[in-house]
Length: 372
Image (cartoon, rainbow, N blue to C red; front, side, top):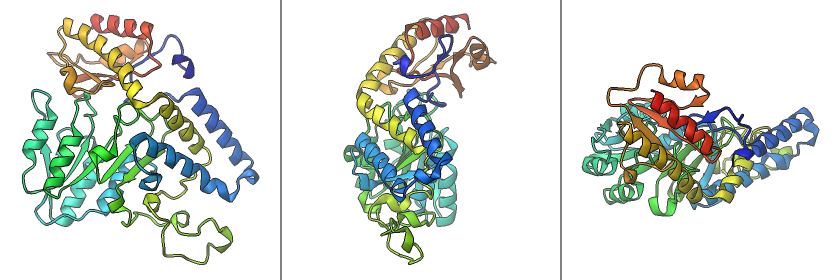
């Protein structure tokens, strides 16, 4: 699928977990959207509603939800803040997070614990990479909420959210999922995992333009309180001539959590193009393709003495290559000088390919790793 992206032949980009390249179709859609703002007389009241609803429906299909469950937001942290604004813990209850969690999934929970007399607890990184068992062992009666990823952002270590979600429900605890490093490249079914809230940024595995993100709210949370108020999420808001006839009632569903200016005339068309391409590819197929690429790199890495998680404990689209004596200084910069792009996260070189990576890219990456 390299031809669908504008990636020069001499660039080997293995850094989708950092920022995904935009597809040509996404760029074209953004350029058309930008033109509408150059000529704003073509923007009708329907443009404030129809494109957001189309994007909402597409994302809902991707995760097995209903369109009414989806809100359009600018960032994963906005979604986490929305979830936290609608969660009440009992004094002394714990909020469970993973060690070395991404900051956006930490700071809000620390504030919530401080405000409600709770405690933030981090599950220690397991030596064998089995996060699921470590989380289940940490689920004592004090846990009121777990906010987890589908796979760890540093090395792709898997978390069995279906098992953990079931265990949390048995003790009336809540589950929030930050799927920024998995959604789009790995299947996710809300009917099986049953999160209370799910958030994902759009600029990684979703291939959306930066600042377009998504929030899923389970139906039991549809009557919550948004973190901002705007006229577009109220009943009868299409009647622009009557916007000063203030309405207290929201539109039904999670739309109440939409960010203001959700209609983003420039970027939203690009997000629609990206999500509809993902639906055509399917996360299942993407996962199988990327798993095959990373399996090859993992096998050769192990031959060179690098450590990787067992295949059953890592997401197929993610690979963390652990150097026994630590990642050599300047590794990312040295590879970038050869136009091979990866990230260093903690003790790992993080390799995150996508469908635009081909055989030549893989050979170049493998040769460069050997040279290290």
